[in-house]
Amino acid sequence: MSGEPARSGIKRCVLFDVDGTLIDAVDNQRRVWKAWAERYGLDPVEVYRVALRTRPVETFAHVAPGRDPGECLAALHELEDEDVRSGVYTSFAGASELLSALPPDAWALVTSNYEHRVRGRFARTGMPVPDVIVDAAAVKEGKPSPIPYLLAAEQLGIAPEFCLVIEDAPSGVRSGLSAGMPVWGVNAPVAVEGVHRHFRSLSEAAPDILAFVSGTWSCPPEGPWTAG
Image 1: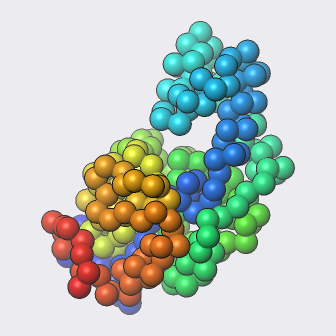
Image 2: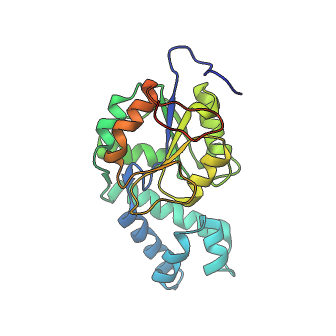
């Protein structure tokens, strides 16, 4: 799909990662992985170090190669679900205002987590939920594959080159880039390799994100994506 967006009235869309981009979940993730590591008699520090750079199944293979990965994943899911109910979640500064300012059908969430947990976290932080959520259950290949972001674009009815990806992690950045989308990085002191623009915070990026959706930003398929 290329050229002008398919949906009339919507020229640009924004695809947000969730954890680390909209929701500050670092403390929760560390707590969950600590509880999981202790359940299996493993070093929580080492487990979390590996978990930060790999998907769960890959983490299990590295830190607990003799364990059934299905059992390990079930235990992790149990702890994550409990954390959604009892943990303390906060949104990044400006996140709620930004999402509320966007047309409901002009943005989506693309996450490696599961939709019920995302909805729980959004309810806890008071943020609006979009029409489209692409979660771990929606795709066979997660980030850094382009599939999650391409599926979100398809469900929104927008050509990939008119979908702006907002990410904080290298795997998500690679996913958006391989989908042929402009990718902006947020919430990091230095730019993740490959991003077209870098912002130290989500609130710093918010005005330009809104400008992208309104059409102020030009977005040629070949990039770079610069102000029009």
